[in-house]
Image 1 (tube, rainbow, N blue to C red):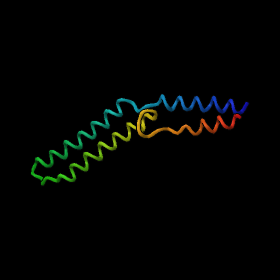
Image 2: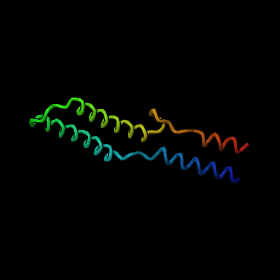
Image 3: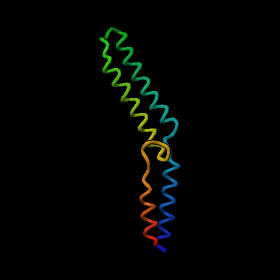
Image 4: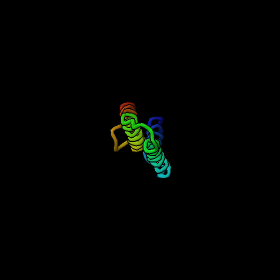
Length: 96
């Protein structure tokens, strides 16, 4: 009976984890932050600063990478970062 209760608890927690996503407003603020960072950097360069192509490219790459990783972690079944199915396999082997 304990194994069945564990299975129900595990299924409920996995369903809740799959249903929980980052709110759209938070993603919007994140993208706005990245865009404003790039605009501020471009404004500083246009205002007479020396062009730092490496710094600009690195900032754009890092901001893009941060957004991609956050979105990938937010969708565990679709992205490159996959959720392990090992707890379910362990439960299945423990029920035999």
